[in-house]
Image (cartoon, rainbow, N blue to C red; front, top):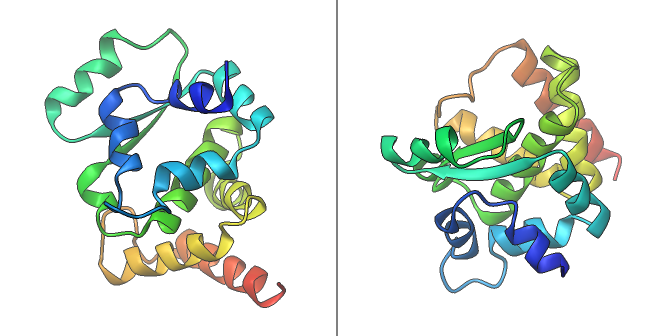
Length: 165
């Protein structure tokens, strides 16, 4: 199986991969391409071995696949189409890489868990996109982007990394 075929298998529905492949429309730097290119073959194999799958939620009915079609023990990375529309492809890729970091290392909690997940994105070249996405979500007052100690510590940490590069 090719890298592209393995990568496509990570998406629970065709709509999930299609959305990322077309966001934004007529742009070569889609979230799908950026995410695929940021992951090595061994990264993708690890995601498959760990039963990590992505799914886009666009309506309550889209949650039905979560109940009936996924293998037992799957780790699901859900994202909301409407929430992602506020971000550019690099920011979306950073957020998906961050969520992969959580799925691969679920035990660290609170700030340690968030910094560990941010590191997964940063190591793949998306630290600055993660930082700009956090700032943008905070400015737009999106759910999950609340100004609290953990969230603000993440921003300070990523700013420090950006200054050192």
